[in-house]
Image 1 (cartoon, one colour):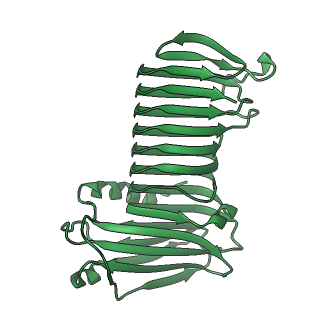
Image 2 (cartoon, rainbow, N blue to C red):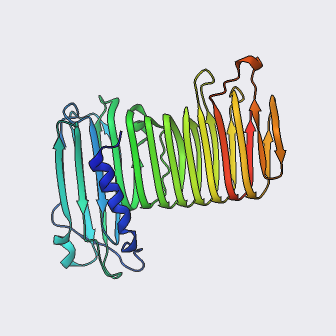
Image 3 (cartoon, rainbow, N blue to C red):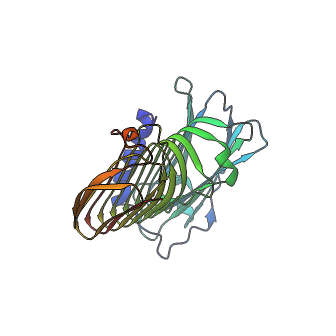
Length: 316
């Protein structure tokens, strides 16, 4: 679960959107004088939170695994002019009660468009670590780069939130609870989780999900998802967009109800063993039966909603 302090920090970072603008012609090429490197015992702190915030600050956070004994965090930063070198602060602290190590890179909340900062954070996790309580990453503008072998780690909680970012993890993200939220950008990847929430304000979502509970939402953009659920367990899949199309493919062994509703656009349901109860232009409800009708779970459901956009649900 996301800690209270972590949730507060992520929410406060969103408020900086008003003062965070693009680099434009600014180039942060001057290296800072204070590179940082810290290490800690992953047994003492099984959770890690990394935050990088500030106006006109691009941050890249790389997470990888190597044959080391301690978790290591290395940071470099670059500025557009000498006077900004002292404006970057790095805070590192551990909460033994929560088992969470928090690492923050802080830069000014307000900068002129002609000034900018680039931050590079490299997190190295021991190869011996295959389970982590949580990984939280919060950015204003930037990217989270997960090394391929990070898919060997099972997270209890995986959280990534950013204002400006394209999140396209190379490895499969495995966790009990996954939360990925981006304001401007796109999300594309493979996710294995008990529960997943994936949201974008302006941009698209494209992914493969092995989950029991899934919520995907976009304000302006499209959703394209392939979903696999365990038909023996209760499942819930919800996809919503204000303006955009939704295309959802669900494995044919899904058993339960479905509902599609929009105001503008077409609605389509395809697949074998589909029973439509309501079949209108902007609304379709019914159930999908795989096997004996008596085994259909009334607890499992799929919901697709849009204000303006086509909705397509395919069982295959």
